[in-house]
Length: 199
Figure 1 (cartoon, one colour):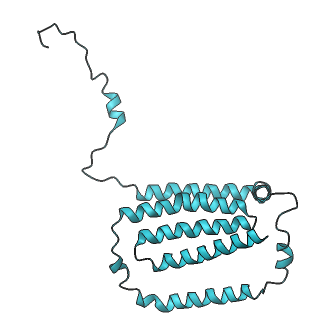
Figure 2 (tube, rainbow, N blue to C red; figure 1 turned 120 degrees about the vertical axis):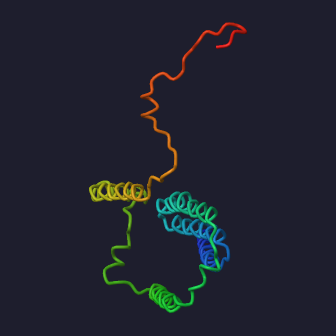
């Protein structure tokens, strides 16, 4: 139990510290790297809570794909940080309001206030003798199977739509046309050349 408590405090302190460093870092590349560390620590907290599926999903999806993509985008685009910070003061009231709301939510959660009837439902989130991953699999593929398939279809349509919207043909750019190349027939002719005779 002591090891679990020490691991919790270690992951929590590192997650909060790296989240603060995401905001205060001057370089966007450093911000992305600190964000990756934040996700890793949040994944450790999920695993400590018994939600190993969510913890590993956080590492595989966000750290392995999304954050690496962000890192490559930030490294390949020349970001002018001074130009990005020019209009920062006009958004200060909105940021302060969001910050106060988040602090109020943390105070409410820290005080132990819960909605009536929620605590009973959360007392045993998974059945006894069933792992978190197996419980999620049973719920997704039995009770919500059709909704799960529909959400996958919606994501597929969104992906195809985004590709079609961003794919543009530019004038003056030469592209390979495989159909025209195959229609030309035989383009190589083999000839027998005599020695020192030429073609």
